[in-house]
Length: 409
Image 1: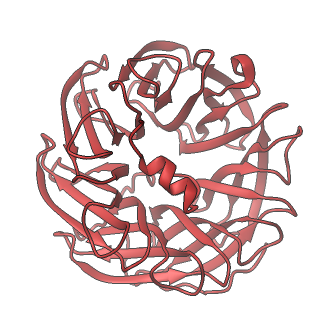
Image 2: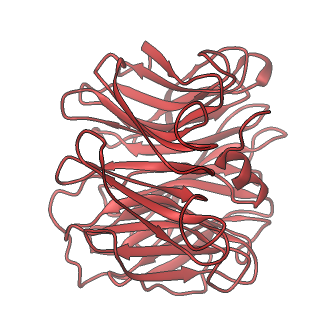
């Protein structure tokens, strides 16, 4: 019998999407006392699901995911929305074909354009799903797109532009590797041509949700493994060299189901991971932060949540050495699930938390630090907006405050 994974449990609860996006690098520390705040929704009469969000170099924001309202075929399409500094729509773009296509991660590139990573069913053999990489100009217009994969299901879940101008993509593959589902890294040149690919895992399901390039040109990724560790599913942290050859791996977790969705490198060259744990904490599922040293050895871990289901999807180290984490809570807030923002000190001790939402289900996915000292949260809302589910952006001040009721641009 296959081991349970957080992937399956999160679908059942349900909580959509388990991916992350990292905020753009800031050139100087922000002013933590001067943030503005707002709350907006974006979408049409059908269902929209957002994934990455980040502040762009012009002070605006990009949020991306999938849309049924603006699809070009009979299924959902990838949807990219660019806003101004207060959330007003500047332009939107759709990408896709006759089957389902979606963006799971996005970054602004060195030239001001964007790179988008996700899953395409329209352009994959047998429509089973491929890694998908799209390069756009600064107006979101496609320059090129590439897909990578085999005949089975493959999903690109995270991307980074590398120091040489190429890209690395991380996710899961059923087409290659040792088990039914393995973690997969694909390295490309600046034009998206594959340079190498590597699989990681055993006979049980394994997946990579987040990837970083390290200072020596290697890579670190995190996710979840059912092939190794102490329990049904464990947090997985793997370090590779520049060719994708594994240097070391670490697992974290107990006898139940545990997983991580985000890894960031910290100021001390260690790593901070965000995810969820059923092996520890106060409830059936709690948000989890794990801090490691540069070699992946645990320094501390903290759980967050109440008696119900709570998850953290993203974490960012703040300029004062603490952490800001976002996720979804069913233990607090106004509805069946609420957007959740947690602020901690440098040891992971909670300073404050905030919830946003209504009577319906509202789920937060990604967070970015903003230049004015606040945060930008991407969420899917079923409490507000124009359709069955809408993109939602929540811009908070430095204390995590923002309007509870969104406006629609």
